[in-house]
Image 1 (cartoon, rainbow, N blue to C red):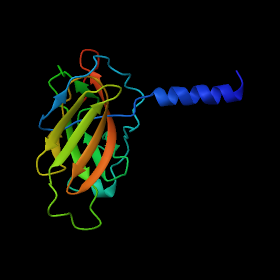
Image 2: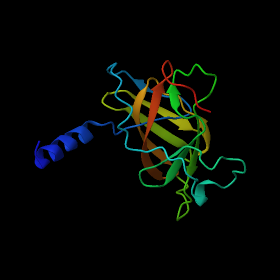
Image 3: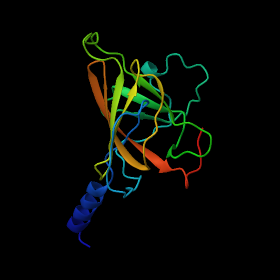
Image 4: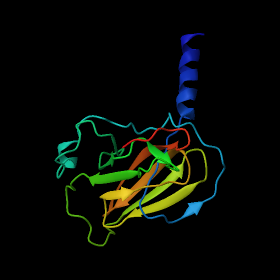
Length: 178
């Protein structure tokens, strides 16, 4: 295969990958969608296992240096994954606990904006969309989503926004995390 053909084929494969994610604390709305579950390997947001940035590790005293976390696309928020992998229909007794940590705002928050963290999650390749809310803004939450797959999260809090992708594995086939 010529180099040009490889470039085109590679672009097609990359474009077909998942570019979405999700979670939230208080279930709100669910819109039905196709039953297909997309592959969980093409999500854009990468699970990091290095140290948290200084702005996100305040208050942690016994957090492992390799705690899994995902940064928002704009770097305004980080999801610290106390359960990894995140799993749909967990049957291992572990919660999908996520600690949301917002980067300190360069200017004071808009006092008219809701402080709660509002998450709109869309399952890649479907019309399935759910909303979750973390009362009081970024902080601890249990984020369960209605099915396995790659979820795109639109995050809004205190007049700020960011996005990220999260993968939820199938609880019937995934081994539990902690």
